[in-house]
Image 1 (tube, rainbow, N blue to C red):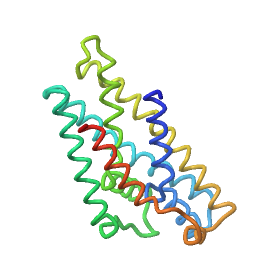
Image 2: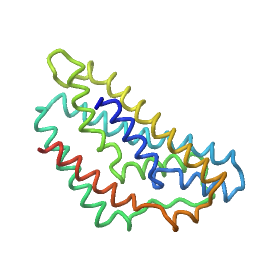
Image 3: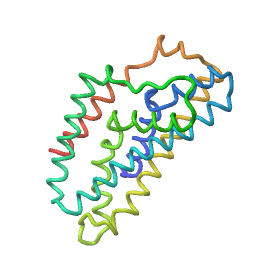
Length: 205
């Protein structure tokens, strides 16, 4: 499977998770009785998520230029496993809370903190490293060769994430209500923790 499709798939998975923003966008829209608020909320949600992803991606590129690739993968894998363990034990207790009166800047900050606390950017590492290596003839992580690839990776991921987030937010706001979450929504927290752990194992093994 193409690495770019995997990046898009991860973006869709992130967009599907209520904790990544669509739930808050719908709640704000319902609270203020405005479809426009739902759509406006998606902008800072996407920006906050993108900044969180970018911080991790550029950190990986920066570290990868000074350490060996295999060491980088082990370090990233260990961090992912640790993050998965933290998320499994404490994730449900340490939620980022923002009130319904928040502005767009507050919503963007909330999105950044949620994506960061969930380790969203770390999930991209196993896909990002091979893409960056393939961008240089010597198959080494370099700033010149990796940064354009990293930016493209963020763009693909965010396009998929925003598309899914917008679609779900619109469907829930227009035709459903938030009560359906209690009736039949799957436990994405467990799936998210599992995805973090599997990603970490892939990097280490």
